[in-house]
Image (cartoon, one colour):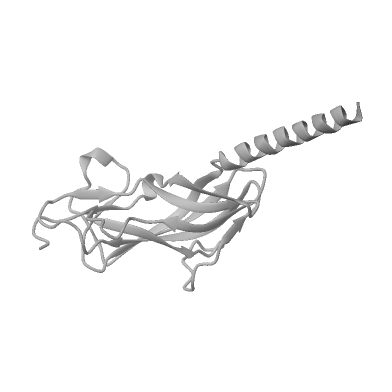
Length: 185
């Protein structure tokens, strides 16, 4: 009888661990809050593409230009998460805008902090701040008049410092929109 009790306890513990792992690895706890945007070396396009209506402003591609988003990230999970990085575009990407890279942001002012990125720990139902830097892609296909944008950012994070995951977080009206002029090359 004692052996049967121990076996049942082991099975219950294994089932609980299995459920906890499934829950922790299936979480999508991150969402964007308020933020600021700022183009650097990019001018406003003459016309915002009609497909965007009154949404984000389109900027004209220019070598060396960048688009910076400093945004609050909300953690809706009941456990802390730590943002460890971001997945950017691949090195052979040919779209008008590339990136992002990630930096730390000031929680009080929503301004970028000029220092190497440090992991951002966000407590349960709390906010953290990150800065995303998108750059005008020097490999952009020239002369097409194409418009490119990034609807979301892929944030890498850990839950409880154990479970590693990546989540696409929508950028909404903060998304970068860049148009390559037909005469850019």
